[in-house]
Length: 249
Image 1 (spheres, rainbow, N blue to C red):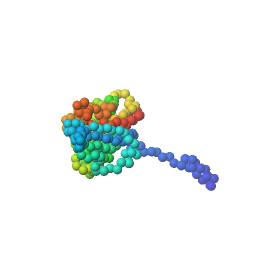
Image 2 (image 1 turned 135 degrees about the vertical axis):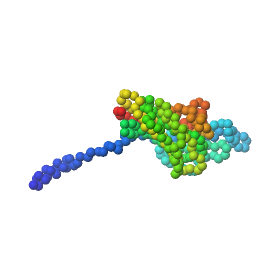
Image 3 (image 1 turned 120 degrees about the horizontal axis):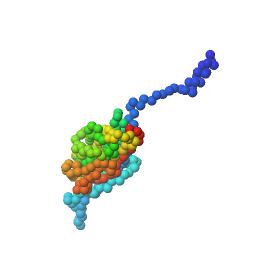
Image 4 (image 1 turned 120 degrees about the vertical axis):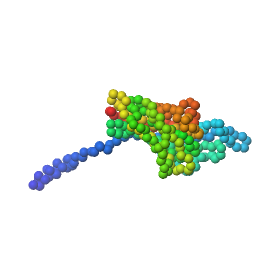
């Protein structure tokens, strides 16, 4: 009897158990996150005594990618304007994450932009996702702006064969947190098998006051948001955060 038990125990030790993974909730998600630092210079001209703001000029902005460590090291403050007065220099920090995830027989594209330091100019900003023409929008695009304990879904949605954007107004007043999210489902737009999908997340912040009508003068594609030349100087520019999916669909 002991010998038989030993044999059985040996078999169990070789094959301790068979575990069947439950993939029913597997979203098959891919993401890319990028971090950005933007320096905005308020135009002005100087005389012998002071810097004087010229209201006829637009602001100039320069955005560069930074590391996650540098982004995390920044301590948020309610006031991040470095030089007070009519002419000033402002530094802001943003994080953008783009994702592609399986959603039944379709795929969900999403981009989220988080501000770490609040911008001084609060006008009409744009968030968008460009994509290949092998997919197309399925249903409606969804937008959500979250700031402090409030939310808003108010936005002007633009859709083309190469992407979708939401143009929205930033909240005014003192706020300590601000994020914008755009997401939508896509379905196949071709009969062939799709082996690669890319979602090109992008965001454009208005560094000078602009009307909604003029802010809507843009397109979206694999290069991100592209403004018409008449309004391009009103916005900062940043590289896209591109989520890349590989498989068979």
